[in-house]
Length: 141
Image (cartoon, rainbow, N blue to C red; front, side, top):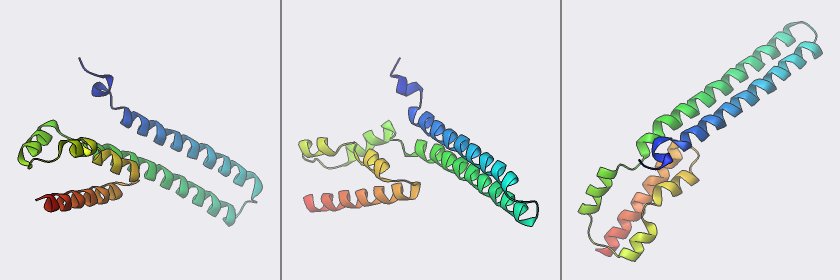
């Protein structure tokens, strides 16, 4: 039947909870700010301007959280290793030191994910790892 992680994408649930809690916190803070503004600033253009700025910033927070969550949900599944591809790649490469390969096997993607904050940084990290691997392959030939 398989592991629970085969059926439920725990990383996606964690990301959803993280973004949902950030949005709820933003709503609370901006609602409190708007309430304070309505009581502390006298009626006039300044009050209207501050409330508009408050609303625009809140919408920007929503848009950013939504974008980051959708970006995470879109990019993450495409970056997962596919079993068929890894078998084909393994058959094409030349023989290497088994002990050395075992110490580095399958750690590149998790390392880059841990270091990267954005998908651009993740891609840059993976490109650097690829360049290092190609250089090591050329040196071993």
